[in-house]
Length: 254
Ligand code: GLY
Image (cartoon, rainbow, N blue to C red):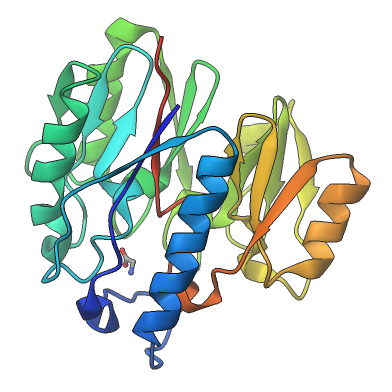
C-alpha cells in the first residue's frame, strides 16, 4: 500500500475554514504531528510517497480531497474551494503511475473527503464542496467499473467523512448530528460519544483504525468493540478543519 502525502505548508495558517472559527495554528507543531502521522502509516506497512511541497497552497497537506482512488481508475477531483484547485495537478501526475485517470470537470465540484467507499458502493456527501453535477460526473465515471453512487446530505460539517467513516468490514463510526444514518442501513453503526463531535473521522489502514488522541471516550468505545486502534496526535491539524483521513490518499498495489 502506498500512502500519498504532502508536507504541511507554512501558509496553513490561511487555510479554508467553513464550520470552524480561525484560531492560531502552531506550524511547527502541525508539522511534527504530520510527521508522526506518516510514521504511523509507515509502521502499518504503507510506503510514504510525498507529493512536491506546495508552500503557497494553504490546504495542500489535505491531499485526500484531490482524488478518489479505486482499484481500476483514479478520479482527479475539482475541489469545491477555488483556492484548492491548483492542488490537483501534482496528484494527477503522481497517480498516473498507478491508475488510468479520469477528471471531474467544471461546473462540477467534488472533494475526496466527501467520498466514502464501502465495497462497490460510493457514498458521496452533497456538501458545500461537492455539488450535484460533480456527483453526477463521478457516477458516470465509475459506472463502467461497477460502482454505485449513493448521495448523502450533510448538516453542520465540512465533508461526509467528517461525519462517518469505516472502521471495520461492515462497521461505520458515525456522528448522527451531522448525517442521516438511513443510507447506511444494514451496516453496524457505532455512535461517537456525545461530547466528541469530531470523533467520526477515523482512517482504516488494513485492520487498524488510525484515530485522533483528542477523542479518548470514543477511542475506548472502539477498543471495547475489539478494534485495533492506533492513536495519533492531530489536534493542531484539526484547527485547519481536517481529520486523519484528510492527510493521505491510500493506493493499493496488485
Ligand atoms: N481546511 C480544509 C478545507 O477547508 O478544505
